[in-house]
Image (tube, rainbow, N blue to C red; front, side):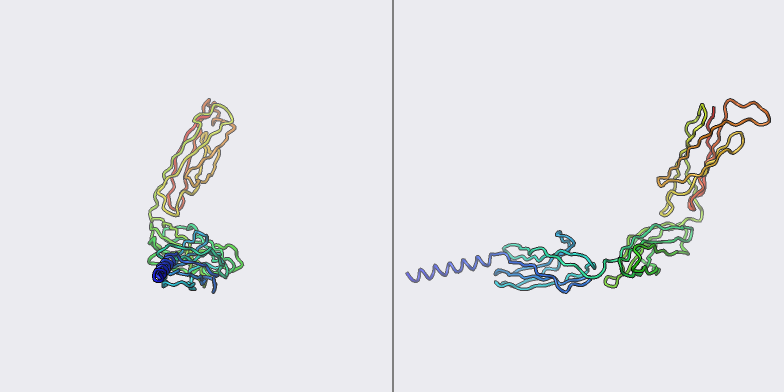
Amino acid sequence: MKRTIVLVLAVLAGTAAVAVAASSPSVKTGAATGIKQTSAVLNGTINPNGSATKYWFQWGLTTAYGSTSAVHNLKAGTTAVSVHLTASGLSPDVKYHYRLVAQNGAGTATGADRTFKTTGHPLPVAETEPATGITTSGATISGIVDPNGVSTPTQFQWSTSPTLTPTNTVTGPTVPASTPLQTVSTPLSGLAPGSTFYYRVLVFRAAVGWIPASTLSFTTFPLSRPFAGLRVGTKPHRDPKRPFIYTTSGSISGPFPAGAECSGKVALRYFAGGRQRKARFVSVQPDCTFSQTVVIFHTFAAHHGAPRPSVQTLQIHIRYRGNGYLAPKQKTESVVMR
């Protein structure tokens, strides 16, 4: 009888051991320590609950995290073990969420979400601006910089390759800490005509290094300028009574390389009876169109005592003046005043 009781107790003890081994880990996320501008030490404790266990940390700007550490291993055991890992590549003055995760053969367990905030000022922010002053051999490239409270050096990179390799570097001005937004620029010269160039502005922070903005491009003008396409129309074709009101509309077509999109002005000159009666200038809009309305209150007397004609013609000379890249183009429209 005693032997039977001993066997039963042994079996029960073995079952308890299996139950312990079959439990998922117990995990607790600890407080972050060693917090700096771009790094922090993440801490926690894990009880493997009798099985070999893997663990890792997660962190990010929200509880969706996004960054995950390498996976580490713990031997089987039944006591809590302290673990830690340094999260690096962080941004200064930013709040981060983090947690500890552990997994063994019985399942996965996650510690509670916790937060910390890195030290220092926010990183400077830069935005690359469209190139200006484009010619056959040069252009001015620029950007807008917010130093976010710390004096910030700048530089420009440019290349004939979209990957900016090989890279040409030009040192830009240092933006003072007290300036909330400043435009920085540099001229480029000696460029090949009719070629596309890629460029960007960068800002510097000692804890991080050079921080690039987005890459833009421009194309230098060719030695031989292409002519613009010019489409025009004036309505109405005939206006029966005074005042005579006419609207001339049109559009400009390219080719338009980067940095030479729809731009420029259109000159409109109005002639009647052999004389210029009115003149207007209108800007080409970003969608490549233009429009101008004029009002004419009187018809015009004939020369040298000749009888006034019952129908008079208004001639409209339309001339697109070009934009540095596209050469000028002109057309003539005629409408009737009656």
